[in-house]
Image (tube, rainbow, N blue to C red):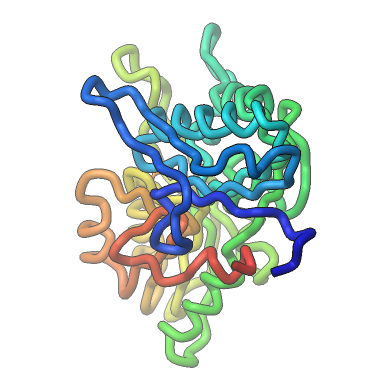
Length: 285
Ligand code: R5P
């Protein structure tokens, strides 16, 4: 083994990709409990820590903070690899008194000793590569090439157009010559201030008689993807596939999408029954 290579610590929630070597459990009241065997052997070392922050994001953040605290104690320098960053969608304050949760989680990660955060298609970043956000160094990888490569297999050699459902997804589709629609949301409703329904997706797209891959950074409630599918059907698209880097698939959104599309697939940043592309290849692990 290369003695200069960073050591790896792997959380149990990464066991589909790497063998866990730290223990994370829960006390009867729900508090998290962390045990890092041989903690002192990591004194002053460079560590890469693999830990997912979704599902159960609040709990998973707390687990990560406990692990980071223990590693801080022995002076380790820690790079955290978490393929999907929860809270990243709220990075703007639209209402007075709203909190930009993306800023908060980044500041907290930095404060807890995360030297660098490695993730995939982070919602508030519009390109791949290294950047800094609220004091946190972030390495943003994109899954778009791997998802487009998978779509080529699914379409079996037939050509296809790549369409983003909104401008946020534009960096994913632009590099493949694709175009994005524009998402128009309704106003806030008094009783649902945390979410604005989608009114429509705008944009003139020439997809009549063509196959289409709709590509987005994430599918959460599926509302965006379903609207995009309906729009592509109205425009006369032939076969339509839906892909995203992160598949949260809340409620029955996966079934609803599968009923409308030729194929739905995502990466294993969040493991799901339709994870067809692995983050492993991009992390060289
Ligand atoms: C939004 O800007 C994102 O790119 C996704 O389109 C959105 O977060 C997906 O959420 P949902 O599945 O709830 O529409």
